[in-house]
Picture 1 (cartoon, helix red, strand yellow):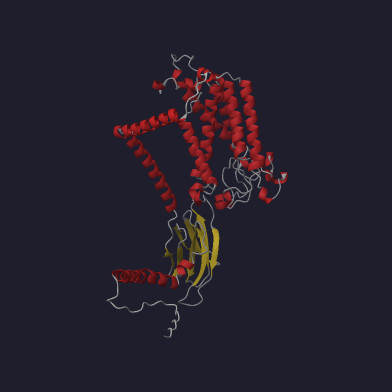
Picture 2 (spheres, rainbow, N blue to C red; picture 1 turned 135 degrees about the horizontal axis):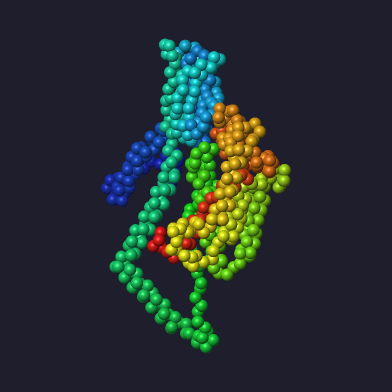
Length: 512
C-alpha cells in the first residue's frame, strides 16, 4: 500500500473538517475558545493596527520636545513681516527678547508659518510687531503646557489685526508622577496609623501576648533540653552593666532628616519640576528653603551639644579646638572635593571656586559655636526666676552674643546699601542682565558680587549662577559669597537661641 505524500505547509494552519460523531467534548470547547480569541483579536488588534498605520502628524511634532517645552507654530496672514518677542512672567521688569521673524504671506489666501520651541515652566507674554516700522500689532499672555502643540494665528481684518492661540495637541499632565508619589506616601502613613490603632486594641494585644508567650516558652524548653547551661562562678558573679543611652530630641532629628531628604532630592534634579529648582532671582521655591532650614537646625544642635558637653565636664578650650578643627575640615572638603569638576581635567588654581555651601556652613558653625562657648552656661536651674525680667531670661542671658550678631547684621546692611559699586547704583540688589530693562546689565548682585570679585577674584567665584536662566546674565555671581555669610550666621544664631529656649524650659514645661 503506497504511502500518502505529506502536504506542504502553506504558513496558515487550517483545521480539517471532522466528523461530528467523532468530535469529543473537549474539541468542541476548544473550538469555542478559538472563536472567542478570534473575536478579541478582531475587536482589539484591528483598531490598534489602524492607529499604528494611520499617521498622526500632531504626535510627530512632539518627538523632539524635551521636558518643560512646547511647540508653537506662528502663522502669518499679513502682507508684512512680523517680529515675535517674548517675556516670562517670572522676569521682573525685563525687556522683550526676540523669538523670531515670520515672513509675510506668499499670496492672498495663504499664510507663512514658523515653528518655535517655548518654555512651559511659567506663563509667557508674546508681543507681535510689524517690521520695519515696529508697530505693535497685538500682545497676549499664555501658559503653555508641557509637550503641547499650539498655533498662533495672525489674521488681517478690515482695519486691524487679530491674534489667537489654538491648541492643536493637548499637553501632558506632568504633575501625575509627583501626585502618585504623594498618594503612595499618604497611603503608607495611613496604613501605619491604622496598623498602630489595630495593635492597640485589647483583643489584638491579647493574641500577640499569647503568641509571644508560647514562642518564649518553646525557646526556653529548647534551651534547657538542647543546650545545657554550664555554670561558672566567674560569669555568674558579673552583673550586666546597663548601657548608657543619650536622650535625643525627636523634633530636631525629624526636622534635620526632612531637610536632608529634600536636599538630596533637589541635588538629583528634583524630578525636573521648576519648584524643586532654585529661583533665578526674585521669589522663593522649595529648593531655596533647604539651606536656611539646615543652617537653623545646625544652630539648634550646637546649643544642645555644647550644653551637654559642658555638663559632662569638658572644658571650653578643648571644645573650641574641636570647633576650629571641624570648621577647617568642612572648608577644605568644600574647596578641594565638592567644588572642582575633575571630569573636566586636573585641579587648577586659576579657576578654582573658593566659596561654596560647605564653606558657608563652616564659617557659620565656627562663629556661632565660638559665641556659644563664650556665653553658654552649664547649668540653668540655679538661676532665679522671681524677678520681673524672668519671662525673657532665656534670651537676656545671652545678650553679649546678641550684640555681636546684631553688629554683624548692621555691617551687612551698611555694605549692601551704602557701599559704592563702580558703574552701578548704590544699594542695587537686582539680577542685572535683561532685568530693569537692561539698564544695569553688569551689576548682578550689587555690593555682594563686587566684594567677592575684590576679595576672591572673578575666576574664583561661581561662573554659572541661576540668574542666567531667565535674566540672561553674563557676569559671574556667587550665591554663597562672602557678604551673604553674615546672614547665614544670623540664621544659625536664631537656631542656637531656639536650642537655648528648649534647654531653659526643659525643666519648666508648665511655664511654656
